[in-house]
Amino acid sequence: MENKKPTAEIKHKLRTVKYANDNIKRISDLLQVIRSRAEKITTSYSDAPGGGHDPGSRSATYDKLVDLERKQNEAVLQWIQAINDVQVIISWLDDWNERAVLEHKYINCEDWITISFKLNYSIQHIYRLHGQALYKLSIMLKQHERK
Image (cartoon, rainbow, N blue to C red; front, side, top):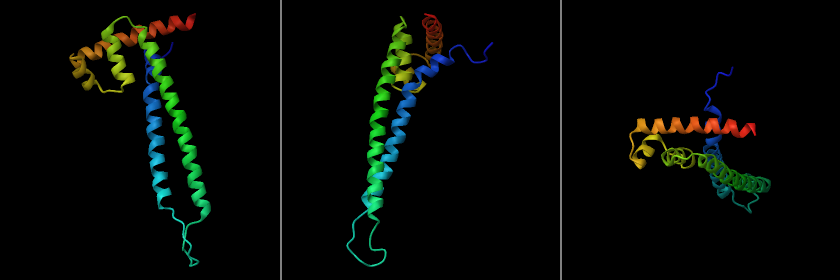
């Protein structure tokens, strides 16, 4: 018998949007650092020692920029795919309130208090709707996987 909760698998699938979003943020932060470094690299025509930067470092920096921008584009495509996948899973639910809670939590990546405020429910009720939705989806996922 497994120790993990029956809803753990569905939660993991729903969190893919957040994981993809975090990846985009990480890559964007790296791009910002490298762009900042690239702006500091200047050419110098001086023959004096220490009069300029190695032209190879400029090329390497630009290569890193191009590579990170490609990775960022791929990450955005993965994020879009994750949103589509999560929307399909959430659409399995019949209850509008459960769907709304999951959309706010897993697509919009909002915290519980924000969701409670936006939907005008107590936070306890939001937790209850969330738990019910996860339970229903975990059963549906198991049935879907058996086919």
